[in-house]
Image 1 (cartoon, rainbow, N blue to C red):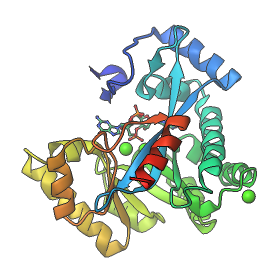
Image 2 (image 1 turned 180 degrees about the horizontal axis):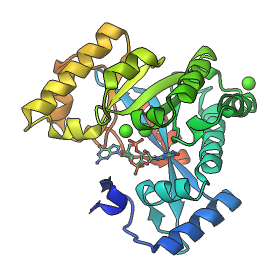
Image 3 (image 1 turned 180 degrees about the vertical axis):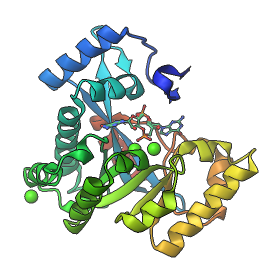
Image 4 (image 1 turned 90 degrees about the vertical axis):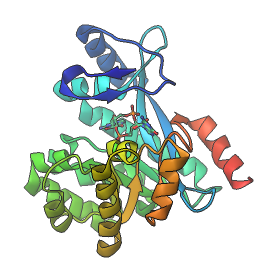
Length: 278
Ligand code: C2E
Ligand code: CA
Ligand code: CA
Ligand code: CA
């Protein structure tokens, strides 16, 4: 199902049962979930496009309503931002992701974890210290942590964001630009910010097959990545045709339902074992 609430398109994975809560109910849910730290983190693998191998994973936050139904992030993240609870939630997710990655790292040292960062986290000058403190509580090396930021988040406070990105990068943390292509003046940001990875927004991947402009954009982002020495990670790969096309364009890694959906930690660890022993 597709939701178009709160001014943004919100695609809902089939895996999540549909649940539309009232604004009040969502607020309540966020407050309790943050207070009790009762959110969940699901993990979606990033795959090599050339061989059957996991090369990374993205942590995606989940909340359940009182009946146990999963609420999609696009329903609650914007509200958490408005309630000023996104920083707390973001930090809790980061903590969980680091300690989960700590658990799988001995068996899967090649699988770094990526965590989404919201705009308000990038406005705080102490964000770097907070991230480093959380990293310090785990045995995860900074190189195994990737932070995904969007262009629009960078844009909201360019000066601070630039300093933060710079400092995180200097610590060895990997920085990915999320939803690449959906913001504006993208190229300016690539010069200005210390970015390591470009994540091509799923809308381009999904339109690639029947829209020449989308195909041209994907093609050009891949070659831009190569010339700037950035890794490129297309999102939302759902079909074999999309995969074939991305391979033809020289893309090396990617993410999408074709490979796997976001799943809970236990399932994800089993999945990593299966892929490794395949
Ligand atoms: P995102 O960072 O762009 O994450 C990718 C979204 O695309 C995820 O949706 C994922 O489940 C979905 N997806 C992955 N592969 C496919 C595919 O092949 N087809 C389709 N149609 N969708 C696919 P999800 O988990 O619902 O998250 C939505 C957004 O919520 C994320 O978009 C991110 O912006 C935000 N989000 C999720 N977790 C966090 C978090 O911990 N902190 C913050 N600040 N934002 C988060
Ligand atoms: Ca992301
Ligand atoms: Ca440490
Ligand atoms: Ca994205």
